[in-house]
Length: 149
Image 1 (spheres, helix red, strand yellow):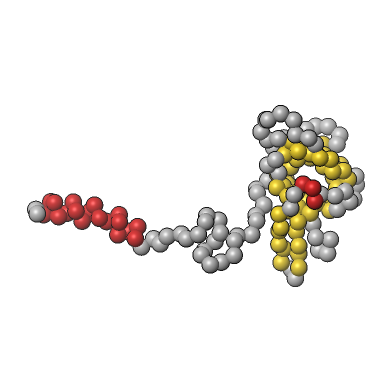
Image 2: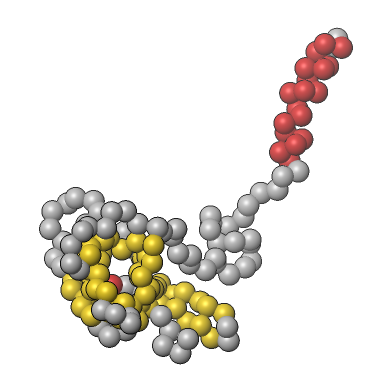
C-alpha cells in the first residue's frame, strides 16, 4: 500500500469515527430519552391570544373534503367589556385542559366535545381576523383554564 492509498483509507474512515461518538437516539421520536416519560404537550406559536368566557359552542357537520375541515365554532366574550369574537374550529385546532397545581401548569389533551359554555378559555390564533362584529378568526388552539388558578 502506498502512502497515498493509506491516506485515502484514513480519510475515508474519519466520518465513521466521528459519527460513532455522537450517540444514537432510542425509542420513538418525541418520547424523550429512553426510560423517561413522554414529553408534555406544548402549544404551537401563534400571533395572538384571547382569554374569555365561552358564550357559544356549536359543532358543525363537516361538509366537503377541503382541508382544513371546519368542525365547529365558538364564541368568546373578553372581560371587562363585552369584546366578543367568534372562532372557527378546524380539524387542525388543538384542545387542552390546563391544571395549575402547586404553581406548575400542566396541559392535558381533550376533544372538541369537552368545550362548554360558561368556562374560561385561552384561544390562540394566527392569520387573518375578519373585520366584522363580532370579529372572526380561526383558532390554532384552545386551552380550558383551571378554575382554581
